[in-house]
Image (cartoon, rainbow, N blue to C red; front, side, top):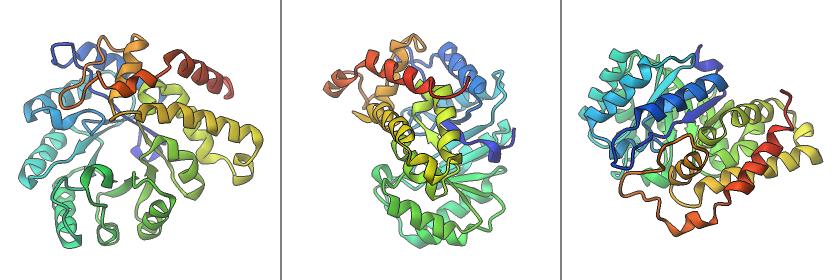
Length: 305
């Protein structure tokens, strides 16, 4: 399946056992569920707790996923600070035959336009597959610079932008800078209904971990519906339910709530996260698992089966 045919990409969690080791059996189960739903896989991003894994662990996780029985493409996250480390990671992805790379804005350093262009160009030159640039100023402490979008749009591996700037104004600015060179995905589940009418072709989703088929159906619907259809009372009710469901996944740092819900569904053997993330956050007490499942079932029933 071509990556350009995918509207729903699941930012896959990395399951850990209670002792902190990788739970490969749960990982295989999650991959099978996403494949059955038709969702592409974005692995070892922030939702996958990649920064809490060492390079050898990351390679073993990626290798395991690439060898699993699946019918959907795999995009692997590339993020950090040291350029040569990230280039080496991309070469490992090339060797395993990944379908794409998600390149996050460099962390912590807050580089300007020239530094970002040089960084992304070096990574895209190393890659042997299409690249998605990831704007996440809330984590990187600086936005993806518009010069990167404009100057690297004609690169042979230019493909997509995951926009998680958090505002409609930010999305519109990247859409304008992208011209016809990049497609844009919503990087925020709750904002998908806002970004879809503005040209988002899909979503890179945390919610798809918890509700794979529902997220797939909702994304296809909201990205194909007209403004008139989306403004109807029925559509607005569906969008409101979607907002309630997806906002619950961010009551504390992602992927903690998603893992708690997955474990409650019996789809993970443990909700364990690696430090500094914790499943003991007080905010998790606000998660009403039964009510969320009721809302998810109600929304699912709105779509044809």
